[in-house]
Length: 329
Ligand SMILES: NC(=O)c1ccc[n+]([C@@H]2O[C@H](COP(=O)([O-])OP(=O)(O)OC[C@H]3O[C@@H](n4cnc5c(N)ncnc54)[C@H](O)[C@@H]3O)[C@@H](O)[C@H]2O)c1
Image (tube, rainbow, N blue to C red):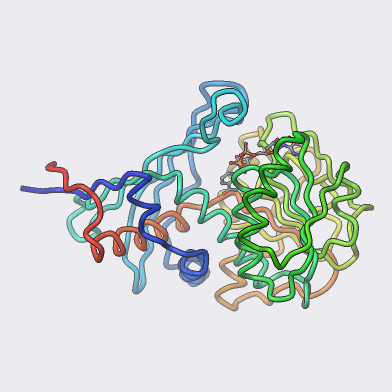
């Protein structure tokens, strides 16, 4: 009888996987991608409600990894404030590459949160100004918080965390959760976007992705030497933040351009093909040098290779610890 391992969100959380573990996995996947060993079609999606999506994200990672899987993930911006539900929810299916059989089915909420933060962390490892000590985070929900965990791992000199959100209550709950985790940082809550960017070496935006983006971060508010990291597509940074600096890096050129060509995101001045400096995989694999001066901008849409690498880690750890439920297929 064939069986698959079912891992609920509680099962996944119980595995005690660290940010360092996920960053190493994400970085290894990016390196293999940069070496041309990853099959990664651009993610197709359906949009049942305005500003909402449900994406299908398949991927095979070859090389020494040889793992394949698919994530079916929804993003509903009103879920946290109106329903007390997460913005992102979904499932991941891990396949056996030899037989194609399903080996595991797992909750994808934890994975999506952590691998997204980890991707920013790997971006900061390779692209942040040397000695970066001040981070600004705009949008203090799930991604704002996990991105801080990633920066704490990636930036050894980090000492000040500047924060901004349109909802007052988010500032209080961000501080209640993050201060005990990282008491070594100084936290500065800022009333405006301009104020939060002041003096920041790394600026990260984690606001809702909108079909009509507001683009609230202006280039003139940023330091000359800065890494800008967009977790929220083209919703927050003005287009010239992305085009006017030393270089624009994406997580997957094909997916970015495919999405742009479909006409909803990355319009109105966002980088075109000839304005992309590199895929992050090229930088991690060493085929493109990292940007080391001026304003570097990175837009990581989220790629399925991060999910496969993280799912692999989750599956291996669950087998090791006998966690999960075996389901007959
Ligand atoms: N790139 C990726 O791989 C990836 C993966 C997961 C989520 N995301 C995206 O990350 C973003 C954040 O997701 P989340 O789970 O943290 O959502 P969330 O709802 O938990 O947090 C969003 C926060 O942004 C705040 N906000 C809304 N408008 C704002 C504004 N104009 N200025 C400042 N703050 C504002 C909200 O009050 C909230 O605190 C979403 O756009 C989501 O789609 C991207």
